[in-house]
Length: 235
Image 1 (cartoon, rainbow, N blue to C red):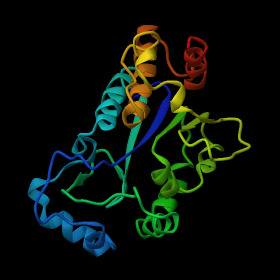
Image 2 (cartoon, rainbow, N blue to C red; image 1 turned 180 degrees about the horizontal axis):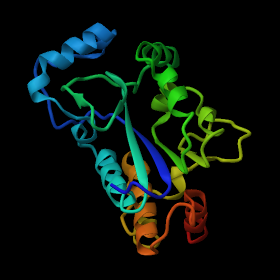
Image 3 (cartoon, rainbow, N blue to C red; image 1 turned 120 degrees about the vertical axis):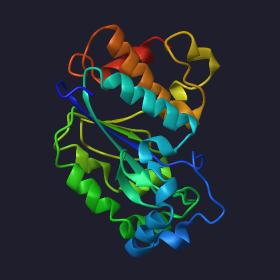
Image 4 (cartoon, one colour; image 1 turned 180 degrees about the vertical axis):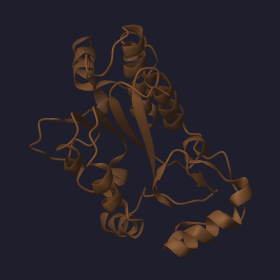
């Protein structure tokens, strides 16, 4: 991993598909407080994996590859937003579990997020300076994060994928995935096919990383917003 160069924060979501499973794995109901979460980690300690390698869905695979490429010339911090264990570092060991923010009401998500101390962790992390904050999160997971505006004061550019979020900050970019997904664009303007909505957040970041690598650039010479605008102009 590069120790120099711009600093990037990638927050990605947990996923249903995991490299580990167990018939007795804990669910949301078994992970509702810190004591239960620590108990689950201890019980499944021998079959735990680093959070960065636990999830096997398409988005997770693209995010991992993106970070691998970006770390050739950037400092990248990767956090995973887990509905079972909160906001965790990619190196944190997690056991098999079954819990998600998806299909919960807004109020249920906010209560669960508070129990996991997610809003407080987000505020703490947002105090750091990043060249790019990339929120590879769906609507329900963004609800768990809380106010994305907290990142705007310290970071150069914040990227998310929910067009319904309103902000006056000039450095917050809402990406419309509808512009990029689908077969007709895959082999015209992208090195890696963007596919559908499930993998779009990961594949867009990977395509950005690959373009930076090809041009031997850093995010300071081509921001994600500039890159995104360029791709839109080619559609």
